[in-house]
Amino acid sequence: MASVTFDKATRRFAKMDRPAVRELDLEITDGEFMVLVGPSGCGKSTSLRMLAGLEEVDSGAILIDDQDVTGLPPKSRDIAMVFQNYALYPHMTVTDNMGFALKIAKMRRSDIGRRVEEAAAILDLGDYLARKPKSLSGGQRQRVAMGRAIVREPRVFLMDEPLSNLDAKLRVQTRTQIAALQRRLRTTTVYVTHDQVEALTMGDRVAVLKEGVLQQVGSPNEVFMRPANAFVGGFIGSPAMNQFRLPLTAQGTELGALPVRLPRATLLAAHEEGAAEIVLGVRPEQFDIVAAQDRETPGLDVVIDAVEDTGAVAYLHTTAKIGQELTEVVVRAAGRQVHSKGEHLRVALRQDAFHLFSAKTGLRLPTDATPS
Ligand code: ATP
Image (cartoon, rainbow, N blue to C red; front, side, top):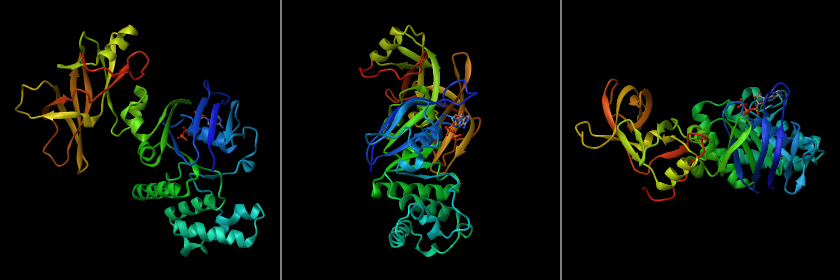
């Protein structure tokens, strides 16, 4: 078991106008499950590959425990990696695939046999040990790839989108199994995904990257409840947070005809930056639908363009006039209700149920003071 430190780790590729990973500072504690998440091209695989020793570090350092491993070859780092395509040897049985790295390391055959048996038991692969990969299902192959990592008893597990070849149902099952397995083994794990649901459900902490730059690191709850900036607010959460760029008024702002009072701390911070606008972030579930006959409650008038009914909940894709613009607003409603395309609705906003970001920098604005 070990801690992992990225210390201003940077990787540049020729022909790229920015570093693929820029001065990444990240500390992963002993036994932690850390998820690196972000959109395609944000640098998450490159970060993982730098830790694995498969990618050079142009500046900065990488430490495992207190050992600087920046210049060490992959085999001297005591890590095990699970790849997206599993990279199993097609001509070898499950037993041989799982034990191969130990054989190369010249471990005694009896010890290899014991470790493979233990891993097979943990992963429920006991019945498949004599089979070759081509006669296994995708989920079983995925487990063999996990087994191959486990038998090595490494200091750190690295996983690069290990579920992306599985169908949706199996992916959900397997993510629970991997998270449970990691909690049982307590091996420090760095896990890469572009899927924010995977990140939120599996990680002890989540590191969100954009264009090679770390945006925020925190528990799933922190990144969801207190996104550090508008990008994280928009990336974490599904469907995405609505974000409206609105003019500042003396009391706060206005969302269409709906006055929104802002905390004094927010107004002060926005005025300090000399901003005339603010970004208001509202998740689809933070709107309340006002009864159709209620014209008294202040709200935003919207028209439904499409209803996406998932059974338990429905997402209403609506349009509202905000300022001079027709703007898309996504609103969560109860599933199997009678909302339909073309319907006019009014939605209200609870006083504290929104996020506020600087229109200049995108950073989260303070909201600590009571509303003014
Ligand atoms: P994805 O989810 O699509 O795999 P990612 O977040 O893992 O994306 P990386 O694979 O780390 O992103 O790539 C980061 C950036 O570096 C991308 O713009 C990519 O094109 C570039 N890149 C990665 N590897 C190389 C390479 N060997 N040579 C040149 N550019 C590279």
